[in-house]
Image (cartoon, rainbow, N blue to C red; front, side, top):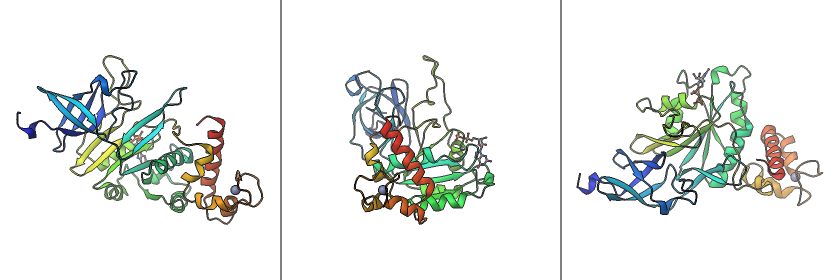
Length: 310
Ligand code: GDP
Ligand code: ZN
């Protein structure tokens, strides 16, 4: 210690701990730093003040690193925090892309989650990739139809079988030299896929905090791994419910890239794309140019947003 190289002045947040942050230096060393009160939110919790993926500037107090400043974020992936209050939860900052992992079966494919995450990515300007896992269970021959439907929405899709490793190389290629966040319902095979992508890295399971007895990595925390010097994968806890943040019912169509250019073509400028005559969106669905299920999930999400639940 003592040389500048031994004490990094900048680092990347790889996970949020109870009251402190774990950091990854550019040379790959992992260490802990505390976050002074001036950077914390009103409730003293770290909240959104420092999140996984943040780049932070450090000062050192003897052997102890202190976060001095969070560098400006180039983007954030957010969701609405659980609970009654309208609150943003920043999940990860500074992403190159998001991989949505979904299963064909067990659990059944969910347009609800996939489309919500796509909307949130679109709003944040973060490219998204759909990984359809458990293709070995595709008794209904759905994989191709789903990939085609999402390709029409401008989303690249890949098919995998994480247990056999089929298709995993293509996911690894897509993640090379980027920072990618992984999100999916519990049970879709995200952990299996991540182990396949980085077999040498030990993936943190939901550890239990000694003080609170609560799962530490099971509720909100995202964990960043760096399996190669220029490649970072961010794991997030399995989702049960995903609520949108910062999207209004009236704006939702802007975040459906295949619907947005059509919206101006409806006969009525205030068309709700419901039963109105001359609806350009429904016409495109009828012609097979827009996926029926994507349109149905758009309508459902819009109605939910309009009614106030998300
Ligand atoms: P996670 O909750 O998304 O992290 O899911 P896991 O990786 O823990 O996987 C959930 C279950 O699905 C486990 O029993 C896995 O072995 C299984 N699984 C994962 N990938 C596949 C797959 O491609 N095909 C099949 N049939 N099962 C899989
Ligand atoms: Zn319309």
